[in-house]
Length: 441
Image (cartoon, rainbow, N blue to C red):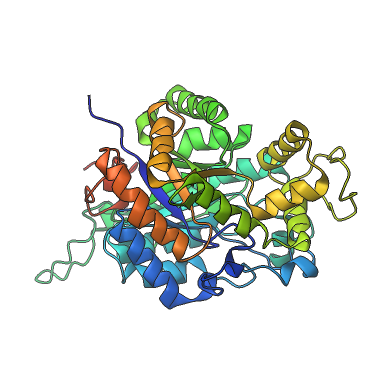
């Protein structure tokens, strides 16, 4: 039996989810908005044989109080497609995954951008499908109110069908470019989608040849019941929140089981929890790095991050009291419930919970390279994951520590590649190329 292999993505927008990252000694304060730095980092990740460089996206600046915003290194960030297209020319094998909103964008735009990126990169693009949980984003797109949670997922499901249908507009052999006969493309190998649905109306065809990968790799990150079902029906990689191993094993089994129920191969979807990694010569040194980083989180930042995660304004809560009951909202249901559960379990005050959220409250691995590799191997072999979406605590040191020290340990165990398996992101993730739904061959 072939040994299971880790798949590794790098969460790179923002370059660190930790709100104190830009203040860490030796860190690049402008790493999130400095192209030469980003180019250096993706080339380092490619040298470490990472599967993909992942850019989340945010469609609003004014999504937190100004006292928190002024302390945030995410207030200015590159537009994903512009940056990834530039980085495609500086790399050869690493995947390039960007977020595309199904709530605030048009499927034709999304299909065209990802098809372009896939061609430019030689087959390395991936689309992270998000419904956009931030209600402030609605105000930037002519809307006064955010679309309700369940409605966003219904629209997203139809959006997926439209985008993939547009990618299938042309057969792979639709462009003979016969100079002698003057025939550039064969009209019989073109399909007009002519979609009319509850949320979307799109004629097509897409004005771009079918992507190199057939479809860019489909990524999804929602963990609510709606999100899990969308993942089961569409996703080829799922970025999950970092819950403890037993909870992650349950989530893994649930999503894989749903995938099987809809008639897909569970092995054709990789589940990748987010994990922040602190590397030291000892556990104590790694913990000291974490403590130093956490100390750089200002309360203004922490309470704003908590408000966003809870979907309600937490600034009026008693900082030294317990978390009060939190009402339902259109924010991410999974993130909110996880924080409510953590606060109750650890008996945290609002101040302590805000500090933890601002500092990053998800899954962390801390210790020596060997200890971190031990933990990652346990997660992989016990089917808590198929790999990880690695988050770096600060840049560039945190990234360099992982590539230079942890990757060799994983390779030595035979659970991570020493060379890329192929040219495309699909080949490296072990995913099949989708058949064109409209054409044979």
